[in-house]
Image (cartoon, rainbow, N blue to C red):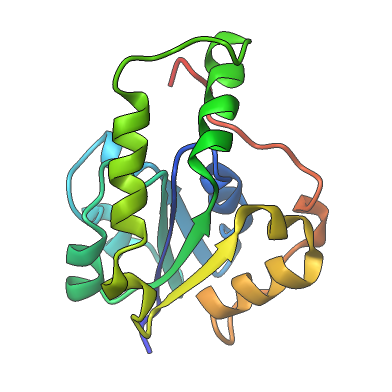
Length: 168
């Protein structure tokens, strides 16, 4: 099985948190490499670790291309669009009453991609509901699935709130 992995979900679905959690002495997980280059990050193949992954909020990556070319075990974090919008507004604007033109359409489009039957039935894809990530057993199961025979999940991360800086 491949040693590459990928974590995707809509924005505000804990992809930054997963990047931190999945980076260990035996693994590296780059968050949002699509902000800097297109395609699978070229430098990632040079990393001297056993497991190499990316975490993306799913707006800029071609999940199908990555699955075909790099064969990463892929975790899709399912979070309802309405929750993503509310969380985004609170994070970005400090309020959830602001309307951003085009955001709902963009999220809906990406939500459709992440729910494409080719992903639903793909042998390298596992899905997890966002709210289930509060459970240590669920997170450990996802972690072990992404990196079989790999590093152990550090439960100290469970209560941590890890977010990307808006200025990034």
